[in-house]
Length: 412
Image (cartoon, rainbow, N blue to C red; front, side):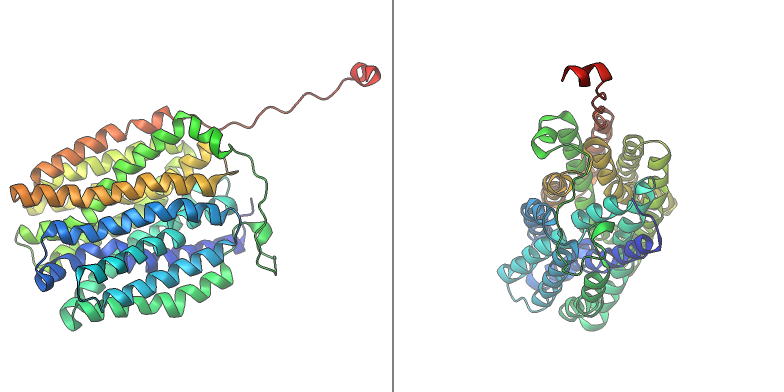
């Protein structure tokens, strides 16, 4: 692997792409929840189902994205995904019914699947070897930093110009900045950087074939860990801010607390990536998921101001680092031969988790009028999931065949 200036420049572009794509769309749906409920008169369960649609369509688009990345140039797949996400935000700003808003969120699901975690994981894993953990951490930290910045920015826009104009303004950087730099800079692997035709022939890489990986226990353990982790993430993205508002915080202060937690997440990704590089992805992933488990317990006491500091620390570390650590654990467990396809399949687990979390919490709130039971159950689920990575087996290169001896050559 080549870790030169070109690789680090590409990493910066991936960071910036994640910053704007995730930060302007799926990561800040919770900021729009209360304005949409007030405008349309929906229940929180109905409003939260928009996030479920993002997750479900992302789950369906994930394997397709993975297969496309095994045969097409990553920059083309990513640029198409960014364009679709921008069009979805423009459509959301003009929606006058649940059906129209749902269609926009379906487009967001497909667009983000094609432009964020799966292609970024593949490109980063191909360009970086010994420092893969910290590289993935840096690339993925763009998502949390973008969500942090855009959550506050979107909250300000909603108050200043209304939620419709807010959606429209958030689409602009995707169209005028992200698409051009992705097309100019991103390449799937170092060998393709000088490919003038832009084609992306598949390069043989060490690793398991898809069928072989699916037969092993590591795939299913990683999948269940990812499902539970993103169930918690989806829960937090949609309900974190409304919950704090329900405790008596202003909308802007609640968004600020969420933003600070995401800033911690931004720092936590590369730090946990360093931990993974120096130890292994299994230990780092377990630590991060346990941190998120603790955060949900702390949320039950978030009415006390003193609890906000440990809340943002535990939540920040837990909500961000696994996004970088799961691809690293996949590379350790499967190699890179079928990474794109397998990442798409693992993405199904994650997207289903993202869809389940908001609906799970929204239903408990609608029935009981409180989030406490949902927080406790989510903490328990995460504590169990944190143990699963230890059962993953590392991929090992097959031993080379012994060289023929002189006697064998003579006999042959």
